Picture 1 (cartoon, helix red, strand yellow):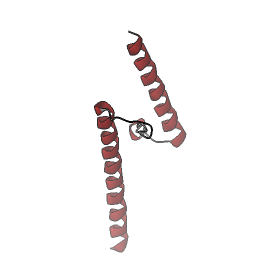
Picture 2: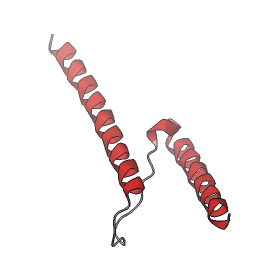
Picture 3: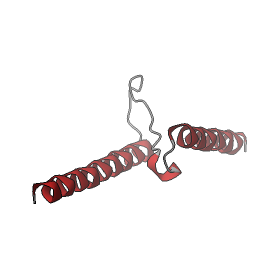
Picture 4: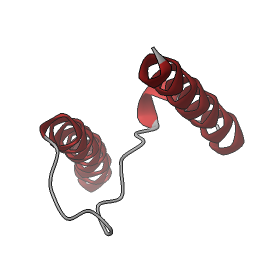
Length: 79
């Protein structure tokens, strides 16, 4: 039971920080991608790996969409 309470508090803290970052930067909450820092980890955790890879994939999707938009603007300016 203690572990579940701790997990709930951690999740609540992360959600509040995501909302804070969203407000400060003026970006949608869906664009804030919290990830775990692996610098001190000796072993990988599957659940964290999946979330980290999902965040990287989302960042690459955002970058791809941005480059598509920039390319379209440059193409339109060329014509």
